[in-house]
Image (tube, rainbow, N blue to C red; front, side, top):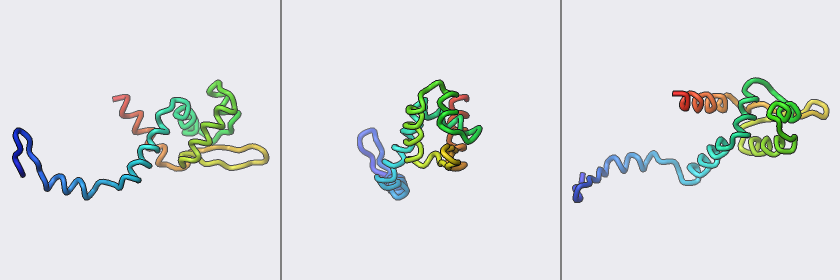
Length: 114
């Protein structure tokens, strides 16, 4: 441990943290992932899909928005791997991609409700 004026440099701690720090590209991907949760409309859609698989029309009616607005947001959510879709005839149904999304939403709500 070096003493520099009033500050200490703990090289062992710095080395330990540096070894476990994810690569810059992964951190940028993580930042992009969390940025998706920064939009209230997308959060409303994700919360709706927590309850049930839904089509664009149902989500649009539920949220009082246009189908094109919902489709745009669903496209973003799908590109980021947060939702998946399946076709039934002419209708496309959306659902959460996996249980990780449920966990992220639940923990986020738990955190802000504390």
